[in-house]
Image (cartoon, rainbow, N blue to C red; front, side, top):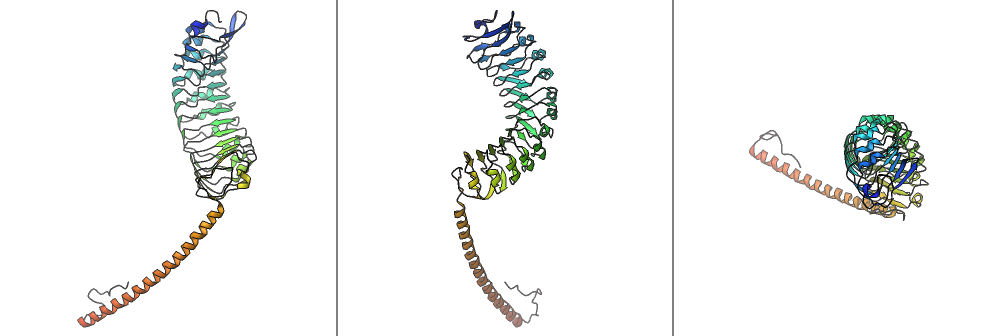
Length: 403
């Protein structure tokens, strides 16, 4: 047990507290995954030699003690996956050597604490799944050593700051499940160190620009459930390392570029619930690593490239009214074999031809009848005009119209 901070004073029913010493000071404190309850005591601040504090995966409650700011030698602070509430204390700004801050999956709230942006050694900031609100401050650009930035599943608002471009070492950017609006800054599409980009479940209104082709290290691109519009750029085909492309549920249009066949590492392509049209390129459906393909609820037409799709494990091509074909790899919904579609089209054409001919015949008969009736009307009018002694044009100067 840590001297002066026993199991009973730290948490109730503590089963595992390990402290590794280097001389008289504790440098590593591990208290994780033990179903611990209670709050973090203020005495934690007495461990001034502590460099790594891991307290994740417990049921700790209450607020973060301000005394954490006394641990000025701290390099790693991980209190994720607990039930902590309140705001992040300003005293954390004193931890100038901090490199990793893990606070995800708690109930912390308020704005993203401004003191964090002075921690220039920070390379991992995990605030996922809390109740943080307000905008992402432009000061985020001060964290130039950052490699992992996860602010997902909070209540953040406003636009994405262009200052993200200063995070020149960033490889993991996750801002999903927020209320972010406006355009994705063009600078983001030039962050060539990115390996993972998650912007899904926001209210972003961008196009996907050709500059996306610069992200050649990208492995996962999640843009689903926004208000993205326009077409998929040909330059996506340059992303040879991409494993997953997900643009599900946007307002994207146009055809699927054949250049996507260049994404030779792709395992999952999810473009359902958009307004894509045209045919599905066989070279895309047949990508060698592709295992999951979802094009449900679009406006695709023509036959499925069934032979190229035989290797798929998960596939949904339903709700594309003008598409036909069959393959055991896919959920087809109301999609029919192309043979039946062709027969149905031919039958409709034949019925339409007979109907058109009948309409012409009926139209001709009606026209003839109308001509006879019109001639009779004109003759009757002329007879009345002669008997009454009127001039050749009648009282109003016009003969009755022939119908």
